Structures are given as C-alpha cells and as structure tokens.
Length: 225
Image (cartoon, rainbow, N blue to C red; front, side, top):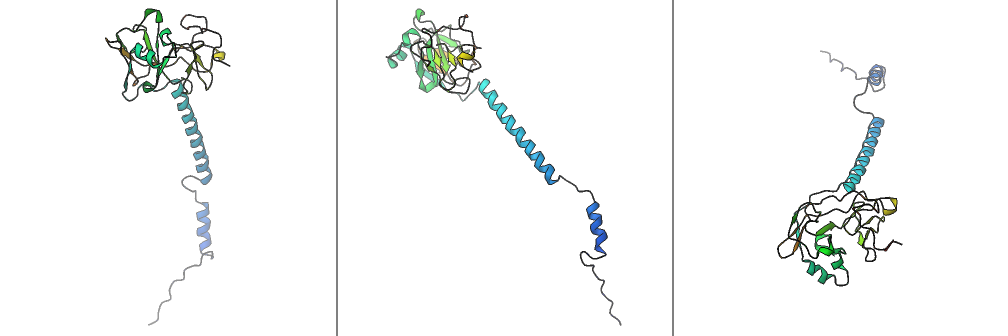
C-alpha cells in the first residue's frame, strides 16, 4: 500500500499565489480611506468650533431669561440709604445689592418713596423702583455707577448707560447691544422690596443722547478718562 503524497501548499509569492495577489490589488476597497477620514474629521472640527462661537455670541446678545428660583429681600428705601450713607441714594443713584447681583434705584426721586405692588416686567415705573442685573449685556462684566454724572460705565469695553440702565446709542458709548437687563420686583405694604432673580427681562434698545428715554449725564464725561 503506497502512501499518498500530501498536496503542496504554494509558498507566498510563488507562481500560484501571484494571480490571487493581483486580483486582490484590483478589487475595489470598501469604507473610507485614511485621507478621506482625516479630511472629514477636520471639517467636522471646524464646524463644531464655528457652532460653539455662534452659540456664545447668541448667549451674550440673548442671555438665558430663566434661572434657578431666587427671591431676594432687599429691604426698604430707608434700608438702602442707611447701608449706603456716603452715596446719594435719595437722589436716585443706583445702590448695589450683592445678594441679588443687582443695582436698585428710585426711578423718580421727586415722588418720594416706593409704591406697593408687583411688576413682573421689571420696568418698575408703577412702583417707582427698578432692579437691574449687574451683568453688562455685552460680555457680562459689571458696570460701575459714577457719582459725578449718575451714569453706568462698563470697565471692560466702555459701554455706557444712564442711571436707569438705558444704553446710550453710538460708537462713542460702547458695543453693548441693548440696555441693562431687569429683574421682576415686588414691594409690600411696608415698602420692602423683593427682587426675583430667577427671571431676566431684556433691557431696551439703545437711545440716542438727547432723545426721550435716555437721562442725560449730570456732567459731561463724568467718570470717563
């Protein structure tokens, strides 16, 4: 009985394997090539960066109008005057309230104190008091009120607002897109003010100096220089 010979396996690169290798080389590849993958990844990265920048820009121009619930008891006008003895609060100068991250001011000092009621719009004219967010609508810095001219000035990019938060229009008055944002407020029967910082009411559009709706500065360029 003779023993059969085992079939020989062709060596790689031998004459039998050459046609198979040639066939594999000619076969179309599936999936993405390395170059295509890199190109698409780069495009996706650029698109994501652009989207992030756009969202950031929108958030500055149109900030979130709702936040976690926070009602801050500010106190009465007399309390503000007592806490800010060196400032002319009685004349309508803005008083900073750290707990509310807000500036509070009497709208018309000639009317005396504040009036009882609630104002969800944040305008405050019916109550004779207003609470402004401390954030500049441009990039979120905190504007400072100037005791010389009774105007706000943002230290970051020089946006300027009257004492009630209305933005002065024009390139000379900074890049903020609108006036300082407002908080809903409530004054009880005892004259105690409560500020609702859970909701932000967008400030009004800028007003040209000399037009109704913008209180002129008491002195020109009071704290600018």
